[in-house]
Image (tube, rainbow over all chains, first blue to last red; front, side, top):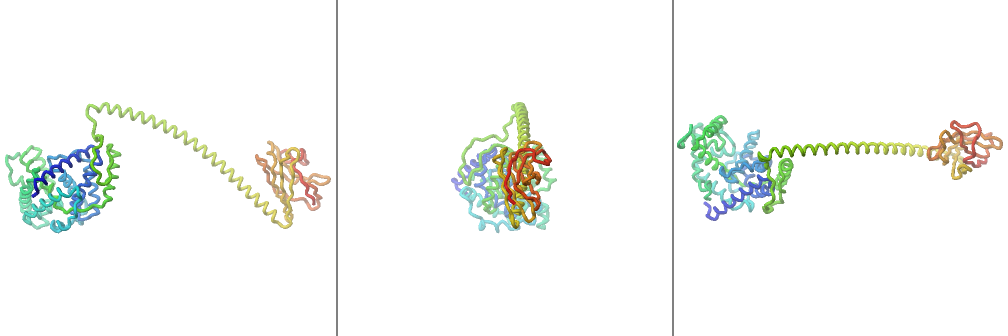
Length: 199
Length: 288
């Protein structure tokens, strides 16, 4: 877990980003540039992870920040932190791209295989807070049972529905639903300090 | 149906909905349930959505190519042209600088009628300006077209002249390079002392190539060349001069039996005369 200093830093950073998103909503391109510089590696990494194809990921990355530009006014801090909003947009765009006929390019690598070892160094803007958050989330995922983690990752990175996951894993639908529910409850508990802004 | 407390089934739906893993039909049904005002499920969903929002951190970071930033810059610039005035996309990693901001959506209900009126006024002004501009443009275009046509006509006339001159030079060269060639020069007479006429005589073919610089002939008049003997003036042919008085003609040379003393040019009525009717404009000895 992060230190109290990290927590303060994180909250301050979130507040900075909320201010930037507000400026973007008012048409400030420099604010968007700052957000891009601070987050592009994190967002690009997520998109590459979902698509398994850098060329397509590049297109999606542009789409993500264009959507941020267009929809900054709709950002609701009550529904999640600024970076979570970015990642939600990124995931949604990437999965849309996957579903539009690019499923064959989908990466089949498990999360561990593309984890810490291949993580590139983050930019100074992204460094401290994001690195800390990455450790927390990975640590939480590591504490799930492999079965729970598997269904959550299939849903998150592949955009598969519960019935598709059941088919892919050869498991009963009810089992998939239960594993998903239990896994998500565990994650919620482990990440609660983060979600409540304590970290 | 609203719930008083969380049950497993609804919790499952909220978790799957947050992950986007419900079927479309199930998702619509769950949304309908939320719209019915089930606060318990709503809170559950918000918490699971926050969890999903964090999962992206588990992905390894990856470096996008630097040119993407430029592409994004130009895309946003394009969007801004059609959407809102905006501050410039700065160079890489420039510090955040608060800048005056023009609101993207600034219309309020109260300002709408004024805005519509202003828009109509602006539209009318723009239309008037555009019409005037179009009229000016059309006039300018017509003028430019006329000018271009005139220029084109001048160029065409010049090309014809150049072509004629080239043909004349070819004829002169042909005459001068023929075996035994001669040149006869006529000097200007009293009505046109500055005139000069050169006759390039192709002896072998017995033809005269005449090049004359005379006063421009009056309307209905033409220059006529004469073989002058001791007792007669024999028409050699007409010399048509242009508006600058430049004339060129190829005529047959004097018969071998003619004892030619000189060549002379007079100004005659169009079609020529049997005998000279005017003063001599140019004359020169031939001396056969």
